[in-house]
Image (tube, rainbow, N blue to C red):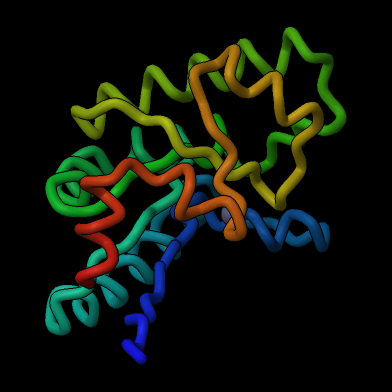
Length: 161
Ligand SMILES: [Zn+2]
């Protein structure tokens, strides 16, 4: 009996740190970006040292504030969309508004990353009508659907991480 190799797929959200706002605490946009960037730099130190690849779900807002970092990450890792900004609640938006924001976000992220973006994870998993995502050229990346939605070359690359 042959043993099947087991793999772990790592994913991280890269977003402006807006959590304090949910608890009515003040935090500037600049601080939100800095806190997340600092965390990312610590994470990258470990991932690069261990030669581990991952998928990063990135908000367009974070990408615009960290263009060089995102471009660098995109060279070896998968970059996927995490919305226009992390405070977006796509569940509460009208469908046309949601699609318009997602298309805009996708365009920004593709421009910063320099590659096509297909994966999507909604901020706080707030999404409605998953089928509508295809209208924005996106695919939801639920963990259970991952292996089926990951392109073969990226699956191989990530699996070797
Ligand atoms: Zn998130």
